[in-house]
Image 1 (cartoon, one colour):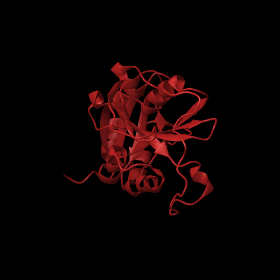
Image 2 (tube, one colour):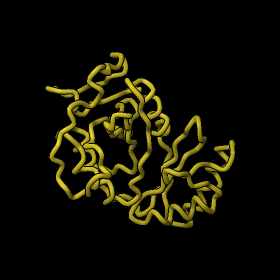
Image 3 (spheres, helix red, strand yellow):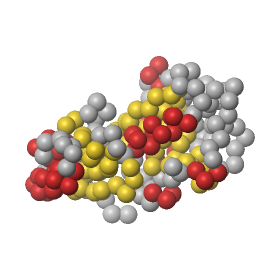
Length: 214
């Protein structure tokens, strides 16, 4: 597998925010500089959004600036992950919130590993592939899930798995000792429509990593 470029910009379209950009790579600050010079606005989650409704003009302005700062630009074939996370939380029982997390430097995604339950595809993806961003889904009961894209092909769906909760209560180097009793509130079970479930590995409980296709 060829090495990743030192600085990358991933563009994705969001219905709510327009063109969203994610800067990542070992020299992600080069990509940040290109986005700021192109007039992109930094958002609370660390992503950038286009300064106006004309996404084509924004992308055209960004490309030469990215090249000047040695950053490659790629366009995601998927909608912005934050939009997908919002759609999922709207279908889950109870009250849920979604938040995009950006792992701009490649080593940062490794901080997720102590908090992921089950040795399934989601863990293998975090271990072996570049995951520049993901989304956390948090319920009002404290249950926390991680949502990530499953490869580059949008037809492959999304990976979703349980996190220990709350992550903020201890350091990432501490081995979790308590498994959450359920990934969802015990009074209801979330069962997505068959057309939305690509596959799910065999499991003896609700906390095994699943694959969700919008």
